[in-house]
Image (tube, rainbow over all chains, first blue to last red; front, side, top):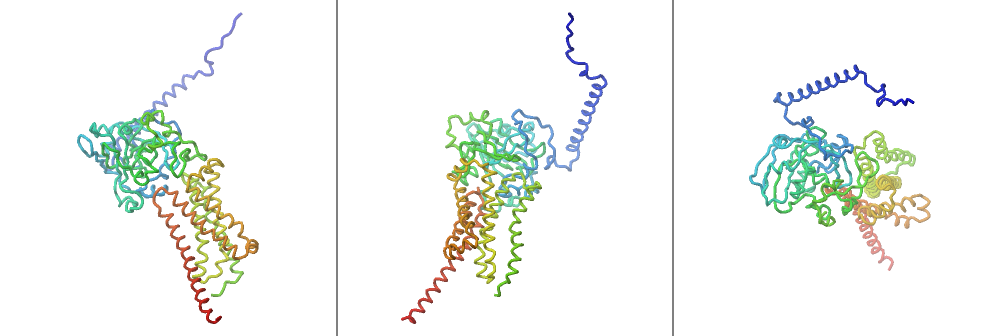
Length: 322
Length: 214
């Protein structure tokens, strides 16, 4: 008896030769177009001296993807840039966007001092070349109970720390925001926060691969409203730890003061790790409203980064060290 | 001053009523036109809260403005204004129960007991309930003017609890809650002063009458 075995691939599914040839042509064409486009961008950046290297809204090039990114859907550019806390401009989350429009984020230098081999000043353009720029899509959890997913562009903070060359005795790193009352209206007032805004990390936290310095958002130069030209992003901590518009980085051997801790020490600790089991004295931290979603979702320990960062705090009582 | 004719007061009630509905209308319109920004529930919560406090203060200013200006007909609008405070307060509470807590009774009880700003807010709303219920002419008659008036002094405590609720929820920058607080203090101070003045006057009258009686 003859048993007819069906073909492995039915002939109907075999692509005819002309079709795959034309596909190759298409790919080659697309590649050529892409190269032309990239060339155009390269020329625009490198030939015309009148355009600044990195103005707000300009595309950043050479960004590499990171395995540390989340696969969750990013919040829209519009929502990220129109709803955030930037107390130097306003205590209203809808106002910083408009008020930060004319903020001068270039030229910009960052002072590095304290317990380092040699204090120095680094230009923002030099800082942006310290390490390859990476896209880091991170969850962002505000202490107020809302959250976003933000596609930052930046590089590991550890790269900047290595360039700063701290002394072995340095245990903490402190950050300071610019003081520019002529550009930041709330800095003219003394009843908002203590200016300048200051933040800090333990050095081992700062060296963690998840901690980055952000210089971009959605493949573009970081918008003023989000802390241009240089901000910290520590995704397992509440948003206020991720200080914006940094002009000074200092290394110390004692816990540096942090702005919100000075405001209300019982509400905001030095660590301020996202912790659904540790309520803010005035509200619950068990759940959060993801911008764009209707129902609240449960907040995750260390904002979902427990696997990577929990070991930094092993043996610590997180109810006390909040 | 000559009182306004009855017809005019009645006619005026329509535009005043519509104006009071304005904030709710604007909020609804924005809601349907993508105008509430990144966090619509937050905007709804804040807007309804703001208008609750605003209407409480407007209601409380009717008496001082009426006494100081002599526009006696203003009193005819007080009930409507007070009920709008209750209306926005109830919307504010509904936003919390529905959009914030999704009817999770356990979480809400936990909140009320543990979060002092929620405790204050709930107090403010509960104090408005008997006032709204007894706002009808029938209830005024049933309770008698004096008793009704006494009960309706609860609005002082409701407004105070509302301002405290606002103060306790902000992270920093107390300007806005303090503005509401300052207006409330001024409106209550007027009442204390008016009461002291009327008591002094009454004493003087009584003192003046005594010799005549003797």
